[in-house]
Image 1 (cartoon, rainbow, N blue to C red):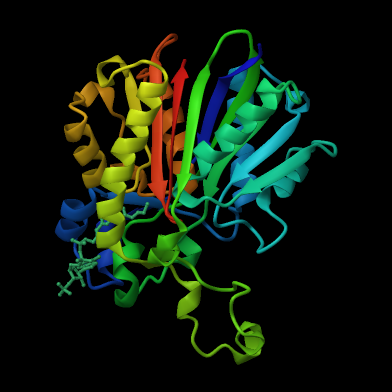
Image 2: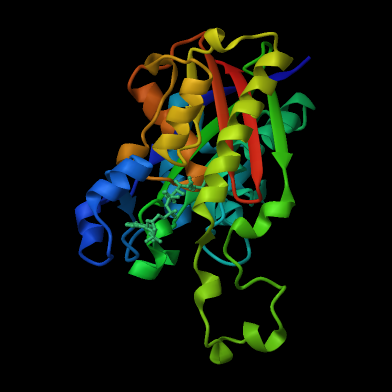
Length: 332
Ligand code: COA
């Protein structure tokens, strides 16, 4: 029986640190409101002159490969989770393949928003278990800043999101690293957190750039209250599902790394699951919500900070647009 394990992690954050005070200068908002409702103090925004999703992903990937003790050429396949690809099509997986100079390996893009990294990990895990590939690069990356409505009209989303990329190398192994993944969706809530355009649901005349008068469909729409209410229920459910499947209890978790949606959501889950501060990792205070990138960035930082040791039981969990939600249970 083949299993997969994470053999290396890396992340890359763009240099520009944007504080709540910076946002106060352009949006009718304030530091106190943002910190109280979201826990966020700073986030990173790209420099459009030099940062692209593909080049940031290459930087994160090289760190992950280095830590895995592998060369770029050892990679057999790429799974890239993002909702903000460099182009509307093709996906960013092929651009990363080009950036890394990898010859003709397959590259797959996953569009499951905040749950994207766990979906990507689950797909890669199946390829490794089936024996099809030995080393897969799994990426979660986003550039949100260029799509945000940085005006008072967009303030409920503009203050939340940030940019960054996290990368994991998944490697075939004789013992289980990834024990299970659980994936869910409920499309009834698709329009509660979405960007409508340039979707194919629009009439032809509204998809022609010269005729677009109303550009609001290109900005993130979020029903924050609705997202919050569903998130706290689904996070708890899907973590419970991971534990039950593997005969574990909340006490057994060494580190829970929840998708960094909002610090209040993470704190709610921690309280409901009776987890100690040592059992939960949060970095949203510094990084903001980076959608598909949030879990791999957090994992990479947790490793750098010595919060994860060999043999630890790690639980990943996410909830977001779709709605989709997911979990993974991993022995490090
Ligand atoms: N600064 C100041 N005021 C703001 C604001 C901002 N950035 N954004 C919204 N407001 C205002 C609203 O206009 C509203 O004012 P009103 O009462 O005069 O109409 C008031 O604050 C409350 O807005 P509401 O949207 O009800 O706030 P909330 O308490 O639900 O908090 C969120 C908003 C977005 C922080 C909260 O709903 C949330 O965290 N939801 C989860 C979202 C999430 O995690 N998304 C990530 C997806 S994975």
